[in-house]
Length: 235
Image 1: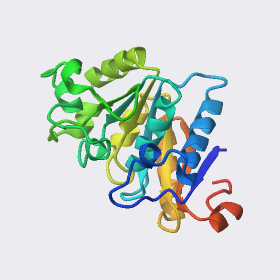
Image 2 (image 1 turned 180 degrees about the horizontal axis):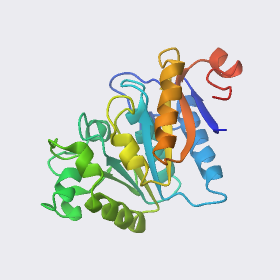
Image 3 (image 1 turned 180 degrees about the vertical axis):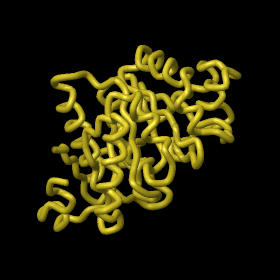
């Protein structure tokens, strides 16, 4: 049975995706900290050094979720690296307001050093970003390469926690490929948008790929959804 991690009303305005830096004392930011706590509880028996975030379909809020989660973990004093592994439609560089001239694809092509590709986040101490870099013609092959596996190992040694933003599971196989090399995966679903059948299929595909699904984040929920266990029953 999966552990369900829920948060309420996590949608921000179009110009305010990183609410944990703009309004750290807001109820929304508190919900992100609750997710952080749930992840920490998942580490009681086994330390998690690498986590991927995905969704069933596009526009469920996975990128905003993982970006704000990265902020809250870094605010605790942990050295965190946020990697944009959505090599098809990258958005992390926009949310974190960093350049995307060099990034993950450059490292995988061995055409750039990590010193130039990994950027600090000026607004948050101990938080660093590895943007996607130029969009490649073969994202799945790059993410499944031995170079990617070696990079994950190296990054996990250099940072307390490495977080990966990945594409939706039902769109492309990238999240399954990368997730199988991470310690855990979080699925983001949007209240009243993500269909149950798509969520079930997403979980099945991830588990079939030997992915450790540690929890589900319910995005854009209201109090009624949470009180009545929306998406809260066993699947």
